Image 1 (cartoon, protein in one colour):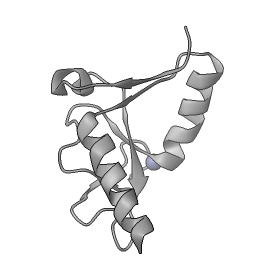
Image 2: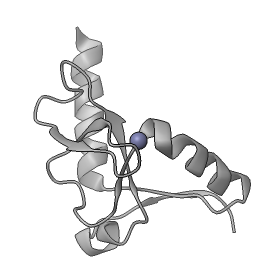
Image 3: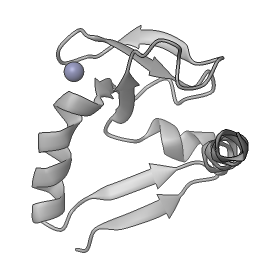
Image 4: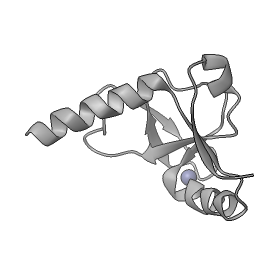
Length: 99
Ligand SMILES: [Zn+2]
């Protein structure tokens, strides 16, 4: 296998992910309408998009890093991103960089 990034455009596919990596809580939120939840591993407060997949365990970026590194070292890392998320992040970065 090889590490890869997949654009998933079906909610069902996104719901089948092994985990959802989320940023820890920031003030202000990274995006104003982010939803606050708790990391399923360490219990720290995290933030995620309101339309993020519901089923996968939410894992903060700190807990996820060693897991992601281990998967990548084995060549088994599959990163999924939805077109909605990609578009939102692109719009956010455009707006942020315009200031
Ligand atoms: Zn955590």
